Length: 191
Ligand SMILES: [Zn+2]
Image (cartoon, rainbow, N blue to C red; front, top):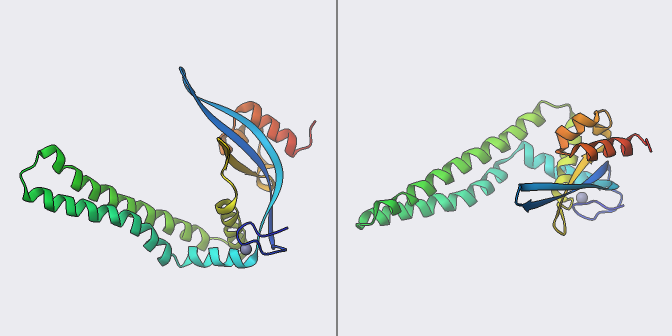
């Protein structure tokens, strides 16, 4: 077995997961979901990747900077637009675009920063063991495939989901009721 993130052999952290494939189909009645269970898999990551994830989450300056750079471009473009447009006599409808871009950029930055700091706060509240596990799961989720052809792939963490009823499974993982029952059966070996 190899680390899902860096291919290093014999990774230290492993998770049993059940894949869920979801296809969004649009027809006359709106959007429909077609869902099926995929394979049961073991996804693993190495200690080096986990400690890097932990460092980046607990000291998130780099992450915040990266989040800002995307939205920062938008703020800048908005500012330039606002300034140049107000110099000339343009239609007022056009003038709205610049400030709007600034607004979207600034709220984007604020939202991202809040999200990043929330992850840090959550980790700080955990035991060392829980923190490592949470970061390992985060690594897995970042690297695991999200798509198979047109299907979205999501993952049910078996050790955690085993304790849930089919209804709770459906809620937590956005499963259609028959798929939630099937997942429950697979996890509890009821056949
Ligand atoms: Zn690794």
